Amino acid sequence: MSANVQLTDLLNYRQPTAGAMLFALQKQHARLSPQAGQPAEIDNAELKGMVEEAIAVNTESRALAFDWRNQRKTAPLRREGIAEVDARADRALSQLARAIANWAELELDHPNRQMARKLQAALFPEGVGVTTSLRYEDQNAAIDELLGRLRSDYTSQIDALGLQIHVTQLTTVNAEYTERLSGLQSDALTYDQVQEAHRVGLEAYFAVILRVWNDYLQEPATRALLLAPVDEQEQRVRAYYKRRRIAPPIDPETGEVLDDEVSGLDGEEEAEPVADPSPALDTL
Image (tube, rainbow, N blue to C red; front, top):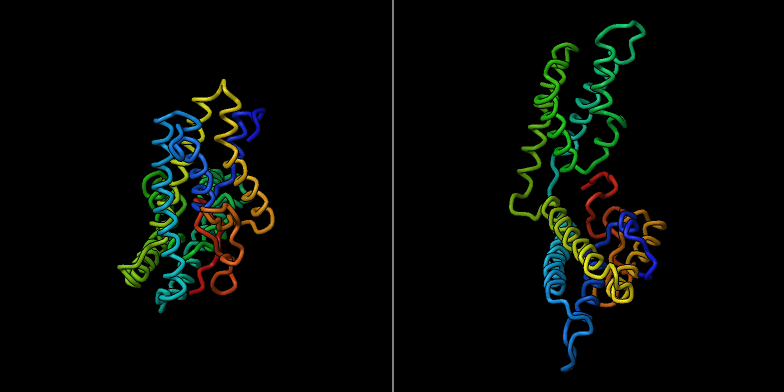
């Protein structure tokens, strides 16, 4: 990263994969560590410790992502009946949204109209499609969150708009959804575990970047040395996002994009999980 990059540019970073982060972190670690009997190029023990911690968590994240891909390819979860309950959950969610919309679209100036419009904006600002297009596990979790908010924050609106039957229906269907998903393969690695590991890796990685800025704000040359591999991966990830709209798999040793690893199941493009993946139907 050049010395004239502004700190606000950090806000524009794409979310890299574990491989991309490991490549940059290992380059930083080399500059912070003694080499061939020579002292470290940059002496900063605390920063070196942060880099080592970030390497450790991202190594774990990459291993889980590897296991997740293999699990899906060699031992897919059995999905008997899951498509049917998923379709019923879609319908129940749509019926709830439609019941709210019926009030929100009233021509009459009724108090419930404004109430419904606020509820619609809070729960379905982009419609139900953003939820119904999620993977099974993610849709199930999203409906759980929506139901929780309805019960905790909108009980009076539920009563006033006569939504209880729709809430009860969605609760019942989603409970069956949860049971069906939970019974598929209880000892399998879950997508949530992979996502959580990636989130931890991202936090450790960006903590290192912020620490570099903090320690070398007045030393642009040193800062540029430490952030050069970060910038290299940012450019590769940004270019890949532009072409594919997903994060690329990166070889942590070379920093190169592993294009031949991208092809996933059922014609999907599948990279290492990212914290905010594009919605995709799970067709297994």
